Amino acid sequence: MHILYKNYLALNKSIIPKTICRLKSSRSSSQYCLDQLRNYDYENFVCTILLKNIPRSVALAVRSFNVEVSRVAEQVSQETIGLMRLKFWEEAIDKCYSGNIKYVPKHPVTTELYKAISKANLTKRYLKNLVSARTQYINVHGFKTLTELEKYSDQTVASVFYLILEGCGVKNVDADHAASHLGKSQGIIQQLRSIPHARKLNFLPIPEDLLIKYQISQEEVLRSKESQKLSDCVYEIASRAHQHLVKSRSLIDKVPANGRAALLPAIPVSIYLDRLQELDYNILDHHLQIRTWKLLPSLYINNLRNRY
Image 1 (tube, helix red, strand yellow):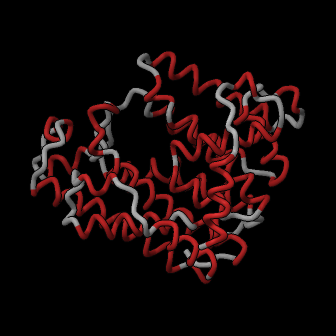
Image 2 (image 1 turned 180 degrees about the vertical axis):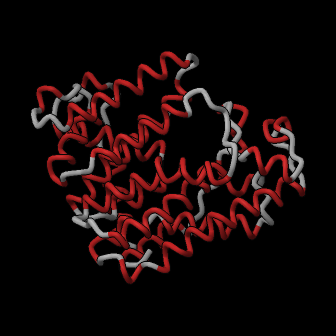
């Protein structure tokens, strides 16, 4: 526990530049990425700082890149502008694989991504998935089916795990299989957690087929109206996430020891599912919006045991 808090406090004491124009060194670009990940993806941030040096730097770059592309839709009001930004990131990927830093856009995230690609020979397809999935959904306001949500999660979350595994030096079918299931589980949970913010995001996280099945109107979701039928619907979605989590964990003995830490986000996923169950699947309960004290000690203990 002491090591985890020491790492976390050290990161918090770092002086993070406020603007990109002030980023003059490799050190400052990594600080920018740390700050971004801590602010927008806290649970994955904590999991990232527990990784060893090279895997940690790769995970930091990949997750920061994912934060950038995932926030495009909520940052713009016009589809055209959103597509232009995503195009920038797509082209940035190609430039990061050019082998020459002078072609890489002068942005802290691309700087770190270029270094990560050089260190770990990351698969370009997985990075492209992170952009193409967001491009496909830039003007879409929900999923048709739960299966579609799973596919989206595989592209936007599992792809991140594949890349971090590569950063750990692991290219293994069983590890990828475990990562795929965990990615789907975490991706489903991310959509559940966004339900209270559906109106602000202008996106319906609950698939259309389940809205019809449980006779829930879109307006009920947008208004954050509590009901038993909403809880029943959330239960079905959460059950699918739990199934994927269980499958991922069942493969742990087949995942190389040096790659298991890459799958530590299974811990916050599991904790959230347990809390949701304790609250009878009332996704709108305000307690779910509060960080639990269990996260840090659970991560520390499981990392020490090389479990996820």
